[in-house]
Length: 168
Image (cartoon, rainbow, N blue to C red; front, top):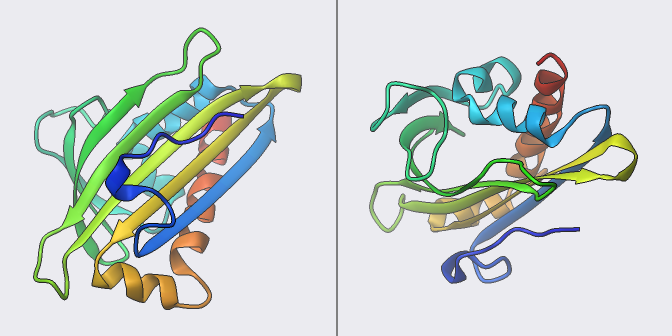
């Protein structure tokens, strides 16, 4: 199976917080899953932990390489820029990733790398993988919280994404 491509600064195991969620499901294609994530206007319909999505450099809610957007998650106003963008084609896995940040002081600043991978598997299955690393004091607090809110929220996002893709 394929893996996430990490910028060195955000390599899992070297940051303050890391979470990985995966779902393998039959009856979907990487293209339909991609479509449901790529259209950010759909996110609030299947993921309860996101709101206030706004693009800075496009009137269209579709992700694209270097897209600059803002959204709210875990009550954080996150600024983000898409740093990796590879739609599904030629049986290669689809990839999208963004660097996100919450401005603030040393106490409140948060930097993240959130990556997604959609991979066609044998037997009509698709693998949906999302992983996120975080740096900053808020990341340390999230990592110490039990049950892990980021792990649980990302699982909701994966399951909601799969349901949304099944309606496309």
